[in-house]
Amino acid sequence: MVLSCMTEQYVEELIRKYADATATDKEVQQLMEWYRLSHIDQVSWPSGDPGVKAKLHHRMLERLQNEIIPKRGRIIRFSWLRAAAVVLVFLGAAFIIRYYFQPIPNSYTTVINPSGKVQLVRLPDSSKVWLNASTTLRYLTRFKADREVILDGEAYFEVTHDANHPFKVDAGGIKTTVLGTSFDIKAYKSGTQTSVSVISGKVRVENNSKQLAVLLPSDQLQFHRKNQIAKTAPIDINVVLAWKNGMLQFQGETFAEIAAVLEGWYGIKVVFENAAISDCRYYMSVGNTTTIENLLSMLANITNIEYVFNRDRSIVTITGNGCH
Image 1 (cartoon, one colour):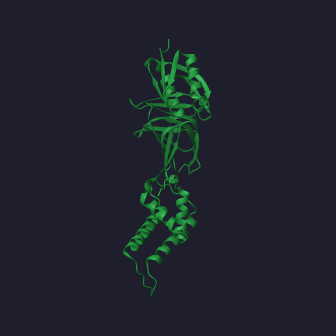
Image 2 (cartoon, helix red, strand yellow):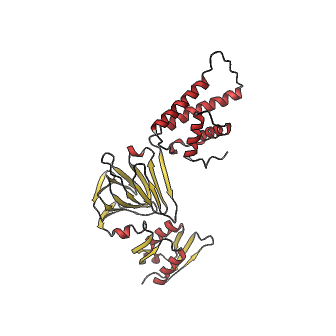
Image 3 (tube, rainbow, N blue to C red):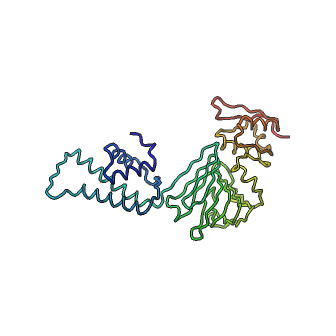
């Protein structure tokens, strides 16, 4: 039986039906199969209304009690096969009650944003996160009690103020802590540098519990992971947030740095036949709906380079003599 397409909402519906004794044999089988195959620490449960959930909890316990304890004067005979099936159902139901009504504290919700798009994520505390292409965000399912997220990629945060629960981002070897503000973090695992750019408010940046900087609006911290050196500098907010506003903007980045952006946005691999080409620097701004062919043509017109795609267009090789 294939269960990969079962959503949280569908599982919740099956649990409700089981509690009400309205689930069909097929639906009970699906629920038990889900219980058998699930990695429960990765399951994200909808918070739900506490009152409704309490009633559901009571109905499930009541049904289990009625089923397990024979009624007075009633003789029940089971074949060994049926008895084994009933035991599995009861154990599965008990397991579901435990994890549905008391979620594991360290269970995470993971959001994966593919190449070629920007995705808006609304966190349980009403904070908003815009994910750049090829970015992954993880946060605790019980997020309101522990507002910490793990980032691989680039994201822009608009954090809801909560003085009692600081908002923390763990990304690229550093931890950023805020109370309520807006900021951008770029920390792709494939890169060598992590950057934190503050748009409004104030943030504290740490590495291994050592404070690196306190950033104010228009400040950026750049952290070089290999040598563990951090430096701060003023930034142009419009340039930092160009990706969020639908632009691919380069202000003097090397072709190697640009290639990393192209790989994330277009989902391709860029190969330099001549390493000298990767040091060329470019100033340009294009919409993120521009095709990779048109963008490479623009770069080729600026510099004496050529490019060729492999058969399935997953790799593009850049050739030329470099910049002069």
